[in-house]
Amino acid sequence: MPVEVTWWGHATCTIEDSGVRLLTDPLFARRLAHLRRRRGAVPPPEAAVADAVLVSHLHADHLHLPSLARVAPGTRLIVPAGAARSVPGLRRLGAQVTEVRAGDTVQIGNVRVRAVPALHDGRRLPVGPLRSPALGYVVEGTARTYFAGDTGLFDGMADAVGPVDAALLPVGGWGPYLGQGHLDAGRAAEALALLGALSAVPVHYGTYWPIGMDGVRPHEFHAPGEEFVRHAARLAPKAAVHRLGHGENVRIEATR
Image (cartoon, rainbow, N blue to C red; front, side, top):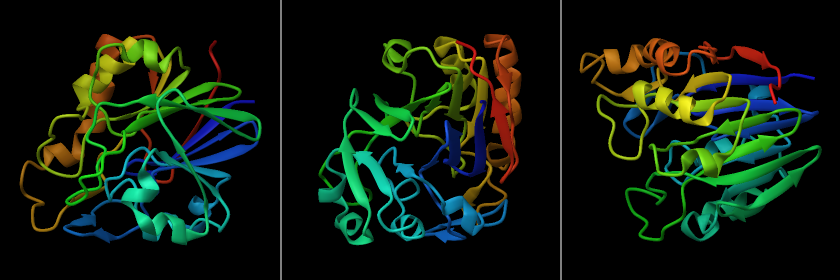
């Protein structure tokens, strides 16, 4: 049975494998602080249906409490260690919160979720001196699917993530400039080549943008998906890149 991946925008995806439905970094808002959703409708109610939610780090566009509140009470939330201390509202959601560090595994139905390291600032910003690790996750069922969260390239990335069939990789951001600890389209293609995945879905671009800055470096909003396709063709020519629109999905076969 193939794995099905749906991209809802930004870093929000649904991964369906072996009868288990996982939701990543849900963000179902039209506006978040200075950001507005510039492309794609807010995901429909079925996007919030999940057996478990994977949260990569504590930044508000990845751990968004109002969006998590749309998930059914009692749903398993997999979050970085220390998240409940840094974000007390997590405990008020009525969810089953499981904190993990890189190397930890969690069994959810017929799939195993393995937390892997990420190179990114994991704190709850703009305040919040308490540190939690930023993480990625590998979903191991019919196939191995890597959700990178937010990360830069780091030494040992291929060994830490391990062999995967599919990679959901961030290729941009929500503003005209990317800081440290991020992948742009070119670095994401380098990551794809390192990992050896034969399928990739670019995410974390073309959704949110700062209010009043539509004319500032607009190519950074529109172009990362196409640029990733181009760079991947050069650096990882055996990989199939699935550039999805918001709400679109793709079925991916295991290759290992």
